[in-house]
Image 1 (cartoon, rainbow over the protein chains, first blue to last red):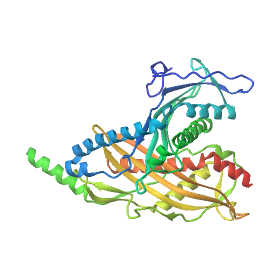
Image 2: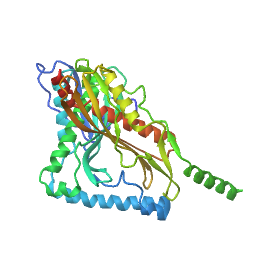
Image 3: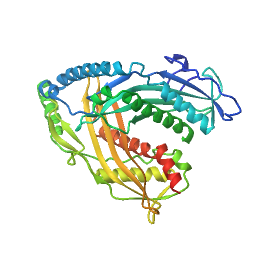
Image 4: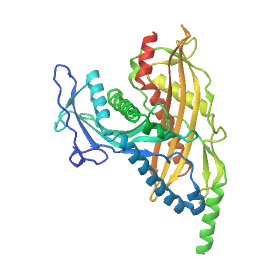
Length: 205
Length: 196
């Protein structure tokens, strides 16, 4: 399968094969689903924070060094978070919501990823986790960035970036101290992103 | 000769850094917002003037010099509340809904964030746009709030560099992501269906 922008299904890092559902409940056209990038939980604290002292003192090189330091701080926060949420998954809740939405709507029959006919979709989860959403109050929200690539049967392939943020804001310590909070906030945003991705395919004309 | 050329570049860059940038931001007309809201029976919405509740109302971002110091404002040529309202209107229209009075649903709320930020990385520069608003949907028939939520639109672009055209593109896309967040909101759609 050759796509407009050159990527091939054979080059996918990971193929997520979905269990075919019964034809009775899925009368739509066949759709194979792959998940080429599973996504890894991240904590991003600096992205929307104004440029710091490193840049002021050292110019762009200083900024780049500071960026590296901030990444290291984020890694530390991520390790703290993973202690209370070790089995974090960026992909499963999203893919489950994606396929559930497609099945409920009925335009597509989600099929084996090896199928050669019909349409094909790939979901690459670029980032997911917690990011600093309110720089004034220093509060975090769950988020996910993904790239949706869709090849409709007999039509031109398209791709779109979907970026979804959680509705709620919390201080980072609240995520560490309230059991289940990080998981529920992350799952909520992943499910919304999965439904959004499915709706993009269903309604794209 | 080489020194003069280098000095010219420095002066040019520094000169640009001290000039206010005015971005002509708008949701692009070819953006496709069509989604599940198109299944809601057509309703008329009245978008009340949104409140500007941003913590920094004077600008939408900072222009910086080569040392990263804030040197000039980045502004929007139009009020951010208008841009958001216009985006919402476009999103509703593409989904078969209309704007006007007398309305079925009144939309009110505030724009809480409209910000552009640049982060230098080792090999790339990351441009980030973020637009957020709090919205309330009120039934005109019962005067009850049928739904309220915070909405967020974020767009990130990593490139080797970029000037005002890139910044505008990032903020355009951020508004579009915000509108998408609203018109694809399953809970809002459920509330609208129930209100009829």
